[in-house]
Image (cartoon, rainbow, N blue to C red; front, side, top):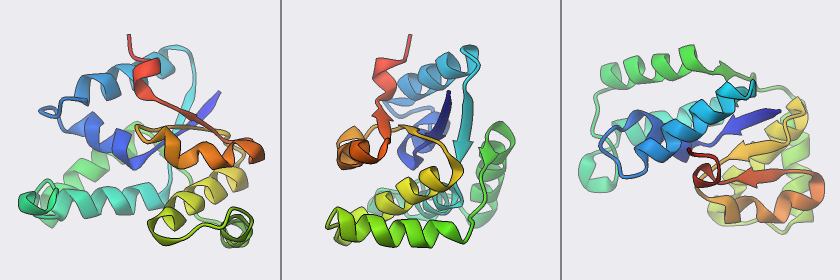
Length: 149
């Protein structure tokens, strides 16, 4: 089975001092041991960079761009980054209208559009409720703590 790793999983995966680091790490290891293919999207990488370079007092990691580059390179070496393709926008546009999406939730709709465009139906995320509405289009949100050993 193929999975997209949500940005929140990637962030917990690399931040060893976070209380959810071990859960993220174990769930990824569990999926890999089962032969699952794990992917990230360009959007995940962009969001990851945002958090990495945002100041600590604004809920970021406080890294310099050079430090963020090294960390993101590590992510890119561990997981395949699927490309942005033209059909993602059209799918996103349909989803936001179909599901009456607004505000910050448009970003999750874009992730779902990219998943659909690439034929990936599962996402590993700490925010499963953000993806519940998309179950009717074949998207399954899986919580890391349901997989961690």
